[in-house]
Length: 498
Image (cartoon, rainbow, N blue to C red):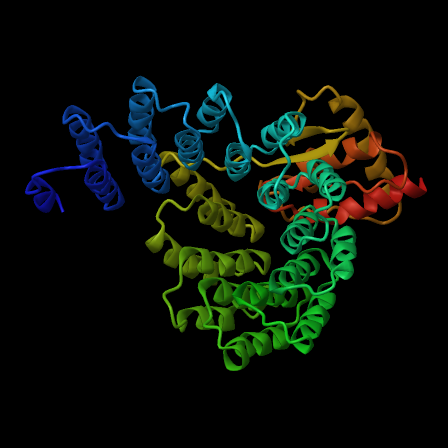
């Protein structure tokens, strides 16, 4: 391309723009910047099209450094106020997870049209800055700019991704107020958001009101029941979907297999896995193989799961093997766990999660020396476990807890209430499940450790700060422990009746 360009006797803006864009698109970013400077020196001034064409390339490959150079060029040469250049800069910084820079560019622009507002909102939502996105959304409304359907289609899923039910409900109110509640895409986004936040009943209400749900809507609702129950309802919905001649996609079958896994339906899981390719022509992906491996693993069919993964049509990833490793921990099969862990470490030698699961498998089986040795090895390698935290949203504020979090102002009151609940539960015959305490301690000491788990602190904080009968929703960044899962509903039942 460069040779042809150099041989041209006259180079107009179109030819320069084509060369700049071509270099950037082929990954030759430094060369694209050099050509941009040559274009300027040659007397052919780059225009907004030049810059707005190059910036998306840097955004696509998350090259913030090169993008900043273009930003500097645009600032020095008076292009930064252009709507198209500004929108491209916002998108570029958002794709490079530089939300603060996106906001600065946005705030510096003298005129903001609907395109710019939506670019800014999508950028915040994409990076999980949901509260910032909602703040900008309110500014957008106050400025008199009417939101577009795609505004909600980017914001609502972001609320679901961070399990922010309160913010999601606020957006739902805006949807109804703006008359967008009949929009298929927005309704599907709302269903997905409510399901991810654990409020399946509202999601089902929205779904049942839809006249002709599409594949996305059906899939979101099936996944909601698969994750939060009842799982068999997910399978009934899938049957209705097929009877209604709505074609399922690969994500639909991930939801169906997830339902089978959570309901312990091994035979049905095998049936749906085969039906996916035989009846619908969908080639199984890694996610489908992993889902069936999870079904077998949860049911204790560990050897079958191992053989199934070993004979996959595509090479299994560490993620697929990790599914079986978790099942080995649950069923205390250390022999197979070591075998599976070896497979994982060959693929991902520094897989923190797999090291932790193997260590916990040793602890569950009373092999404390092996567990301690593995953890020492992890420390030598500089591997640090991600700290667990739980959070709860009350009165438009998020309260975050970590295990034995004495820094929280309510800590003493929470522990006092938790001890009362524990005593009441014990009198009713409840015995703490200490299998997730991976320390060589006496049972009484293990029970004390369980009392400080982050999810219990968040749960009791929620009970203390809400009226009786209020649903308490606790989110956690990692898997919830068995005792916390069991004691959650026992504790809420005790608080209601006691």
